[in-house]
Amino acid sequence: MKALVNATIHTGEAVLPEAAVLIDGGTILDVVARGDVPADAETLDLGGGVLAPGFIDLQVNGGGGALFNDSPDVTTLRRIAEAHRRFGTTGLLPTFITDDAQKRTAAVDAVRAAMAESVPGVLGIHLEGPHITAERRGVHDARFIAPPNTADLALLNGLAGLPSLVTLAPETVAPDSIRALAEAGIRVAAGHTAASWAQAKAGFAAGISGVTHLFNAMSQLGSREPGMVGAALEDDSVWCGIIVDGHHVHDASVRLAWKAKARGKLFLVTDAMPPVGAEGGFQLYGQTIRVEGGRCVTANGTLAGSALDMATAVRNCVTRIGVPLDEALRMASAYPADFMGFSETRGRIRPGLAADLVHLDDGLAVRATWIAGKMAVL
Image (cartoon, rainbow, N blue to C red; front, side, top):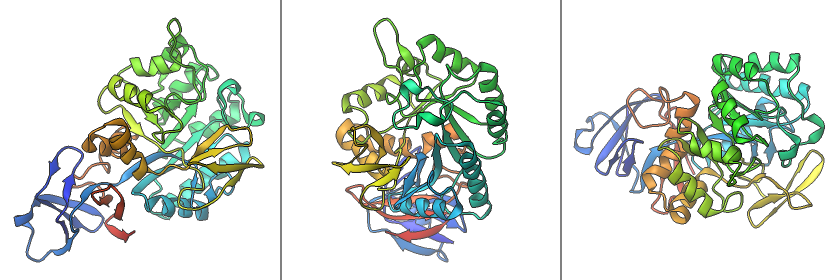
């Protein structure tokens, strides 16, 4: 048994300044008062700071110089997860964006293999596209964008049993197909969509439960046509991921979303690309992506994912948006866990949950992480 002591513990439900977390193997055994730590426990003094649930990022395209679309295999997934762990992310969904069907199948197979091998941090898969609208494709390659055919639907329905998030445009996918995915336990999100408010609401009724990177690559809120943004903000049952890097969404828009959404329904994502945990640009669909002032951009200035990490997203929420630290930490862990149905296994510091933790200093820089009770000092 190990005891983590001398840090303010943010459990996701309470803030405990004088407590300790007990870990037994890969599981949280208990949270106790500092004076109640068993005498035979191996005690680790954290030296202050914050101990919180490890961050869960549901949109990670790459990291450590690697891009999932380039090499959809276990080696790439291990490299990406290791890079993001340096920034407090102890669980993620490798995200495969619009591409050809053969590579998409390889991506699913790679995630299944990584989970079978217990690659630390890999929790499932996010398929972002190709069933989106070209009008709001962003950097996604138009050659591969199409409504789902029989083979596509077979692949998607075959995700049942694998923790999965699928981003699609509700105006391009039949409600019956959306409903079948949702009933199979697959999380369906709207993204890269030009849907009207009515189309968005119909998608929600069919089983869409989330929105991918709110505000970005979707129909905007207008006075007479609320669009996808308006539908997402209005509906208290819909979760929204949001990129808080100061580039994708104006701080005021983030603040408005935080005030508008029901508590627990707005969570942080990075949409991270290879520069997280590495340096320099990268190749995407054969074109060079530059990193300029923290932005990943194409030659014509189109945003191509981000260079954001989750620790920075949490700091930005606190320092730029004015979100209380305890809530910002929940936006990085508890709420994405709730959205994906992980709340019985991770996302909070609670007895019986996975010992996936992050230790932050007073400036919210990452000092250490634990995945299944195994510590990495950073």
